[in-house]
Each structure stands twice: as C-alpha cells, then as structure tokens.
Length: 161
Image (cartoon, rainbow, N blue to C red):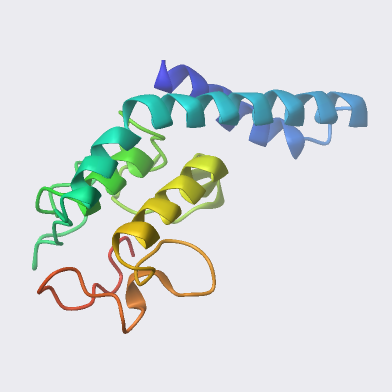
C-alpha cells in the first residue's frame, strides 16, 4: 500500500511541472497529490510512528555506527529512534524517499516523497523526547545543535547527511 501512495506522489509532482497540461489539469493533479500525501501520512502515523514513540519514550535513541557507510538498508544505525526515523522516511516500508538507494535524500524528487505532516510529527516527537534540543526541521539546525546530546552520545552531526 505504501508503494501505491509513493507512485502517485511521484507522478503528481512530475505532472505539476509539465508544459503539456492545462492549468485546470495541473490544479487537479496538485489536489490528487495533496490527498495522496495526506493518506500516506495517515498510514505512516498508524503503522510506523508508534515504534518511534516507543523508542523515544524509552530514551532508546540509538546512534550512527562509526565507519559504516550510508546505505538504503539503514544498517549504519544501531537500533533505536534514529534508525526508526530513517526507516520511516527513507525505506520502502515507510515514505520510501531514498529513490536512488544511496542512503541519502539528495534530490528534490526524493524530498517530495516525505509527507510534510509526517516530518512535523517526527519533529514534534524528537523535540518532546529531548527537551526541545534535538529535531529535524526548522531554524534550530537538527542534530548539529550544540545542545543536542542523546544520552552519553556526543552531538550527532550529519546524521542523515
């Protein structure tokens, strides 16, 4: 089911930039894209976010494995909230944003795969679990923030590159 939503999102983003569509068709495509993104966010909330909540509530943040390259499998993280977040956003069992399977979000098309509502929900959960010190979006720069310490772990720079 996740793959179905992701395919529609990719297609509607491509259509909105098409020179061949009328403005009415572009508006219709954007509306379909918005509804699909909302449906994907609902699915992620129901089936994937609960594990992140468990990890964060138990202060099981996990960590990035030193010297292990980024991969689409997420094997570069120890078990915990970091790996769960990565799975929700990048893997096929979630938003599947890592379209080129290099372990990073490095294209606009990949960034468009992540529902805004899911990003906001993940941000709120991380902020709540870390006394507002660690997050993913916004002006406070994610894990580069000097106050973002996860347990005894040093600050996590470039966690998702």
